Structures are given as C-alpha cells and as structure tokens.
Amino acid sequence: TLGRGTEITLHLKDEATEYADESKLRELVGHYSEFITHPIFLRTVTTTTVEIEDEEDDTEEEEEENKDDDVEVSDEEGTDSEVEEKPKKTEEVTTFDWEELNMNVPIWTREKDSITDEDYQNFWNVVSKEENTKAARWNHFNAEGNINFRSILYLPEEVPAHYKFGNIDAVKGGLKLYVRKVLISDEFDLMPRYLGFIRGVVDSDDLPLNVNRETLQESKIIKVIKKKLVRKALDLVRAFSKETAKDDDEAKEVEVDEDGNVIEEVDEEKESPYIEWYKKFSNNLKMGILDDEANRGKIAKLLRFQTSKTVDEDKWVSLEEYVENMKEWQNDIFVMAGANVEEIQKSPFIEKFTEKDVEVIFLTDPVDEYMTQQLRDFDGNKFQSITAENVKLQDEDEDLVKRREKAYKKKFKPLTKWLKKLYGPAVMRVAISKRLGSSPAIVSNSEYGHSANMERIMRAQAYQHGQDDFSMRAMRILEINPRHPFINKLLEGCPPEKEEEGEEPFEISEETEDSAWMLLDMANLNGGFQVTDGAAHSKRMNKYLQATLGVEG
Image (cartoon, helix red, strand yellow):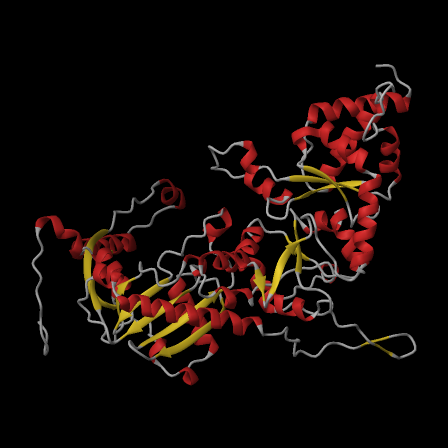
C-alpha cells in the first residue's frame, strides 16, 4: 500500500488481460506518456535460479575428511577411484523492482538559450527512434495566435529507407501531436506529403485531453496548426539554404620545398551543406511545386540546378541567381530535360546557346518537366524548353532573320515538301532550322507537346495502361540545316516542286531515298527520340556497310 496519495485499481475483462502484461504496459507508456512530468513506475518481476547449501551434505563431507586423515591412500588408488560430485541444490528466487518508464525530458518546454546542440541531437534520437543518425537542422519555436503551441521540427540528414524505393509517403509517426505532454496521436496529417520526411513534436495546452481524434482531424484547429507548421518548415529550409560551407578550424600542416619556401596550397571550394542535403531531398521540394500552390513561390526559391555554365565546376545555382545572370535581351529561362547531364551536354540543341554564351538549366530528374509545367515562370520570366520549335534568341536583327528565313524556305521548298510526303505520319512537319550548326538535321517537339524526354518517361511508367501510342508520342518536327552539305545534296536529288508539261516524271534514286530515311533516323537520335522503324534502319545500315566494304549481300 502507498504511504500517501491515491491508489486506483483497474479490473480487466477476460478478453483484455493483455493490458496487464508487462511488455504491453511498457509499450503503452512509451507511446502515449513518454514525456509527462510525473514519473511512471512499472513493477517488474525477475525470477533467478540460485544455488543453496545443504546442511546434511556439509556434515557428511566433514566425516569423510576425518576418515581420510586416519587412512593412507596410495597414489594408484587415488587415481583409479574418481570421486563423483553430487549435483548442487538450487531454488528459484523472485524479486520485485520498480522501473521508471518515462525518463525522456520534453526539451521543447525549455527556453532555447538553455538547450545545447548536443541536447537537440539527443532528442532527435528519441523522436526518430534512430540511434545512429543525426539531424541536419532544426527549428524550435512557440506559435501564438488563435491556438498556441510549442514545437520542434527536424530536417533529417538521410532520406527515409522507403524513399529509396520510390515511396514518398510520410514517415509513420514522424510528427506527433501532444496535449500538455500527453500524446494525442502520431497519425494526423500535420505536414503535406512532400514534407513527410520532417520529424518532430507539437505540444499545445489549448486542446482538451479527452478530445475525440476523429473530430479533431476534421476541425479548423488542425488546419491552423498545419498551416503554421508548413510555413515554419519552409522557413527552416530557407535558412538552411543561405548557409555557406565552413572552413575547418584545425591548423593545417605547412609544407616546405627543398629551398625552405612555403608551398601554398590551393584551397578546394567546399560544397555547401545545403547542396549536400538538397541532392537527397530535391524530389520532395519539386513535388511541393506540384502539390502546394499556396507556397509555390517560396518552394521555387529553394530549388537548385546544374547549368551549362556551372556543371563542369559541380556548382548548383538557384533560380534567383540564374535570373541575375541573364543576358540583357533575354526574357526566358532556358531549360533542357534529359536522362543525365552527359546526354544534355552532347545534344545538338545546346550548340547555339553555348556559342552565344547563354546559360541553360539542366533538368535531369523525371519530375522536373512536370514541375516546370506547373511553375511556368519565375520572377516574370517563363520557362522555355530549348528542344521545342521556334525558340528565339533575340540578340539578332529581326528583319535580317526574317529575310534569311524567307530565302531558305523558298530554296528548300521542294525538299521539305518531298520529305514530308516520304515520311508521312512519322513527322508532323518539316521545317528549316534557325539554330543548327554542325548537325544536318534534328527532330524537335512542338511548343505545347511532349518532349523526347517526357515521351521516354511516359513509356516507362510501370502502371500505365489503356493509353494508345498516339497520346504518348511527341509531335515531332524535323528541322533541316540549310547550310549543311548533306541537305544541299538531298535537294539536288529530290523532285522539283512542279513538273513541267511534256517532261518525263522525275525518278528518285534508291540511294537518295535511303539517305533521306537515314537522315530522319539520325535526326531522331540527335533529338533524343527513338528510331521510328528499327528493322528498316538495320536493313539500310546493312546495305550501306555492304557497299562501303565491297561485300556482296
């Protein structure tokens, strides 16, 4: 019995006896009452087996020892007769102890100035239930207004395990709601899906302890808390993004050459801690552009990209930095999507921009094109894919460009007309390119259609079904280079635009037609598309190799 206080006895039904189990009680207290002020003790029972001494055995041993003193035993007799040891007697002893279950301290109730970084990291291990990980950054704040609450939000250093398999659902039990340090639930959607990796606690004194969870989920209170938490979480990432790489404070050993002169080492520029974190969680932020229209502008400022000017230096730039570095005549943010950086760098689309020193943002994540379709513009500058037709660089005389384009269209009209008739539905249109340099042709996409990269992504969807090929295909436009010798040679071999009366019909050679098809295959590959007809392409290549090597088929 207790010396003082109140003793409460609970009588359990037969089907509820599991709640008297020690492990179940430990689980419940650890889940719901981990941080309450008053200590909770659990009476534990420990049963051990101990040896006991037998009084009869002790007296027998003394008598045998006295006999041994009177009788002399030879060495041989001593070795032959082995004394059998009697098994010792044991008994079970039961002990009762009181174990305190809620020893973790709710540090969110303390003042921030009194909490060290080590305390925050230790509490991260308590919240995340992960002993060997660390938090990248955290935000400890008090929210005041219609409802007051205290909270600590943590950014993890590593992505959750299920993220690595494409599942970006929120971490189970990542964010817990407490009322006066008593857990109400860890299943509320206090964060949107794209911020589901954030861990932490929310504690309010304004909510009643006996609140119904279903009612609370649908109430305005949760919506108010969620709105403030999202804003604080984005502020936390924003503050993190402004941090720069810190130099090591440790003194470096100075190297000296043979003459005694100090060798100056070139300090390698360290990667920003935010970029290191961003590489792991960038897809979540980009998902936020799709899902969170209200905070789309804030999230856009947190994005970082590699560009045609910074990729070789392994630097990442923000959209704000890109806009600051734009040319005076430039109104668009130029982007190009591809499977990887190497593929984009080798693309003929990038030649004109490299030549004119215009920066292009590389989009290498599958979610990037979906993101730019939703974001559309940044700071008044719209996103423009350089793989689309009619991409204009406004650094040239507009009148000169129009006159040159008109002359090329007139000259190559017979070729473009014949090629469109030859290719049929394989291309939507044949056009004169204004941007190609060394490549004879390339296939681009229409301004409002899918790019080659988007077509590749759509075809790779694991669960896509019921879509016909036409809905996934990009609207392909063949752009030919009017200054390339291949194109001029094809112009000579194609039929005239109009045949005069009385003349024999123009015959197109088999070589010219094969060359035209090989030109389309090359243009498709240059544009990032697949070859239209693989079997026909192999047949043409086989014929070409036979002619080149002088081998009969």
